Image 1 (tube, rainbow, N blue to C red):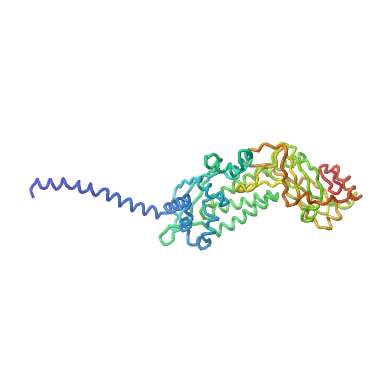
Image 2: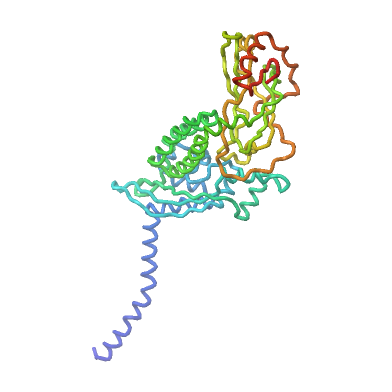
Length: 420
């Protein structure tokens, strides 16, 4: 071959490589993309993408075999990992405004399990609900205000760090939810909330600490987020407990009025009355005590005591299903509850009503403007309009009880005589 021919051949080689370069880049990108999408990070990304696109069926298909065995698709829709814990009415609107930011991927030593960090931002639901309830009125209902807020992006938010757990099954990475183990932990949370609303704040706090610690170490997508939410509840309860002494002293600021024992519409004895907050603090929970006394003078003794909540303001999001407004300073509320003492005690003993306990508001939401005439708040399904006449005047035994308690408990209300 001539020297000239050799030069021409060499000049053509770069041109052939030039045309091959895009093809090589395309093939490499495809291979890398396929490997990436089959990685733990890629599976986590697909799960979040489908969740944000409301493709719940596809999210379900990405779950581990064990999770799909424990939950049907219909059951999965009620507890989707990483999704907001709200009713179906608000699920999609709130999910739409949630922001997910995937972080680092971490492979475990066994190479068959991994985690992907995710930072989640969403509306601070308990604070948001109270804020809208405080503003509701002429501007619309809380749910209407919520729809406007979601459309304009004006609402309080909370950000927390969560983790997506994955397991390798047949060379494919799957999302691990761990439903069975989570169910056990959530049962403890439900008990903690029951303790809280029953006024057992110490037990509720202790239970929540155990729940938070267990969720933090429990493998399962979304468990860290649940722990963050319950940690916020624990902080609110801790604030309430820190003000126990102040709450005890505040009971003198609460005035009981028109307290009487009548028949409820169920035709059983009940107590009705009004309570006024004459202090300057908002109250989330208020319980009354009914103490039954027998005897007179030195033989005076307590034979029974029962407590009844008359103000219960949720610290959890209620989906705007009820009014979440604390007992405001200057507000008066009507109450009614059915007595639980045995018929024998109700027949022979004398009841007195006192303030048992209260809890100040811990969530820093704005308070609504107090209306001139407060609306009645009755917890139990009793109707004062159907009540019978009050019981007969006090017996001599009841009068002796009244004299004995007048100094020690000036706020007590004698239900048989209707006096303080």
